[in-house]
Image (cartoon, rainbow, N blue to C red; front, side, top):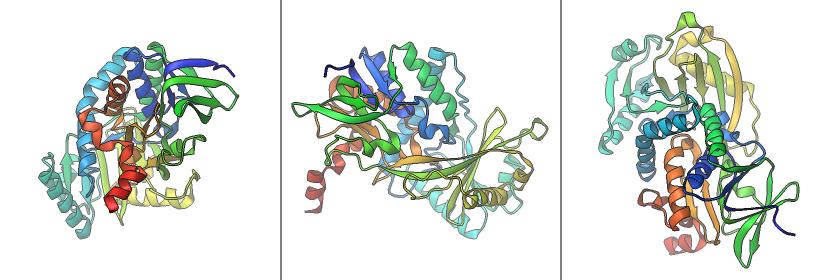
Length: 388
Ligand code: GLY
């Protein structure tokens, strides 16, 4: 069978990571195609869009922190370039984040996070409860203290996804709106995919950017298949009527009974409340329990939310990886690269991923800041070496 279509670069998956890869590849002069039944869909349709390198810092993720910060630094120019290329407003808001504590245990935990942030050279300021409420008057009277992080911003991921589709179209990226069903090899090298409608899409280089589905593409050899799993997140959207504005002026977040809760206020009046984190495979059911817990925890933080219309409930699947960090660049199979496993940080990592993938597609090498995220860190040979 002769290929229906041939390109230099074929991106499998048209979520924000696949799209930014395709956009940057096309800008470098590659004839680029994306295969996805619904480009611009995927986890970005559910994500809150926090650009929270500092407040989402976790112990053991200091290497990832470097990549997160590199991407956060690129956001202003990235957003300006994408808006310039498309005319789309991305809802990029440099509003800052306030992470608060509701009881003594939370406060102790937040103090620990503050110490870790300072050791990592990050900017954050400790505020007492009164100072927190002065900044955000809708906070519960019981708030015991918090961390003000002016450098953690937000963007609207739905607008970002839409703009990336338009930017790709304008840069000449070809969209195949169909499922990729199977990778095919020619002389031991990844050479293209067969789509659900039986077409063959051939390419010089193939980037697998299928989000949580990245481990599902048939034909990918087992030792190359990315170890990515779906991690369910339920998210609510409320609307702040104009008479209540400004309800919150920045992202407010906390850990309540061990669960992350965040409220992300958009300029449009949308208030995003997230998110559960559930290891339930491919389940995207919105459950009464999930909605209840989110509303209960958000209400403890900001009691006034019960007045707001609840406009949407939805669940998405984060692409989790074994070390919570993305897999970027060449695999052990010639011609096949990965851009997946971004877990909680897909929106934040979009700019740096686009740049890193364009670099590796052009030179064959990852740029320095992306080297630790090579998929080869999970290859059987490396893992055997490490355990020996
Ligand atoms: N980054 C927020 C979340 O994954 O819920």
